[in-house]
Image 1 (cartoon, protein in one colour):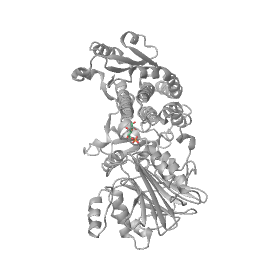
Image 2 (image 1 turned 45 degrees about the vertical axis):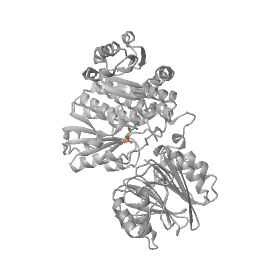
Image 3 (image 1 turned 180 degrees about the horizontal axis):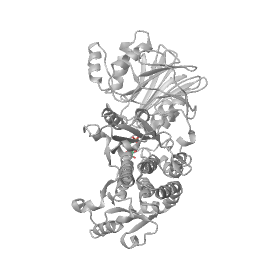
Image 4 (image 1 turned 135 degrees about the vertical axis):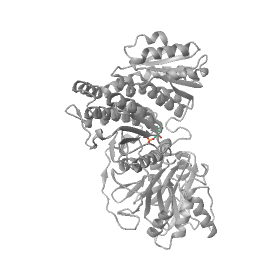
Length: 605
Ligand code: F6R
């Protein structure tokens, strides 16, 4: 939520920062701003709306000349998205410019205190409170002032700071909001994520909570909250610029859908050695747990719903999936015999982090399934299994979700073997199935043109239902979320057997019902449900396995996907639903990669 970039070097700070903001735009896109330092002068431009609005103004502004600066693209938390509330914010004395991700919880208290000291405020943001506090705390020693300000703030922040007295130096600090420093030659960067500067350097340092970095063109010095210098290791990023670019696709979402076979392969392959599942990162004895609790938000939670079914089915270990924003406040019944699995693409989701902390405080062991290396969730967990999906830029997750499911499959099979719940024959069969998943995902993508035609037929619908049973129901939840978040069409996912308990009242002539019929043991049941909605006038688009002949008699349209063992169907069957959402949104002329009101990486509650 919100993107930050900072740069110092010898090049044109404006061009580098604006380019970085374009890459970061997926993190927030209601307003943006840039501040460039030239000697002791700080010049700033801000604009409501997308980064392109800022670019068109900033490029014409001759004052934005300099070799050092900061930029920000915003997802509003405090104050409506307008030019005034956009970042950077300047202190009243003009000495400091600051960009900020996160939320300052005690901002009202601080603001009142500063108003009493005679300070005035222009915006409704908590960020302006922080920059004013910084200027109030400043007595000529910037490092001291930032550390003091950090100690007075309650909440989360990743910040970038310019100080008029210190030309050529950018400062950055964080608590519970990510900051990564990029090390160049004769120039250095920082960002809320690596995409901000991946075209310039792959050598990075992950800033930890309560650390402050002083970044000049030739040197990066990092301090802890006591002001002592700390030594940090440098990490080499394994993906390159192409992964963060559209590479000829119209949208990141379509590119990321198409990347799924490769992403699943990258997640699976390193963990299968001599036809055995090996988790080098997982040194735990699964036998010591009497239950598993999966927690996450949004699509990651829906991946967890699939994970719950798989773990229970093949490990016979009691497993539940709970939304993190609920779990954190529910005084959950968790103890040291509970294995909590937190799932997250970004690794920065505030509610998931809070749920993990709650679980840890009750003695649980926490395992994270996470995509972003070095993220807060990866670090907070006792164990982390990375999904190797690469950077995900589209706000609606696709390859993030399927790689999470791939990890659940491997984890469940690994655990079932440890627990003696599957025999060697079944273990070998499962491993062969897992190895075939990338190829099956690739074959499923062949449905692209057919799905596009179906989207052409159905995109005018005002409300679309998704029904399925058991594994298929878990996938319906994700299919429905994909559709509504990017096309703004009302949609609900229903356990097919639940329809008749109320929701069937909404089925009427022409209503589209997408029926997911891939869980073979319950095929006849879902067919009855199809007949029930058809009898009330619904049109049915069915998703079924490739050898399913019966379904053609029941549904108006059919999409057939490659067949595999029942438990592995979810990772396959979601792919046409992602494509369907994509093409419906495209036909409705929606901004697919940046849906309204949303942003990638939800770092606020
Ligand atoms: C939907 C989507 C969100 C995320 C959710 C959790 O397409 O992307 O629902 O899944 O915000 O995010 P992460 O996985 O980053 O914790």
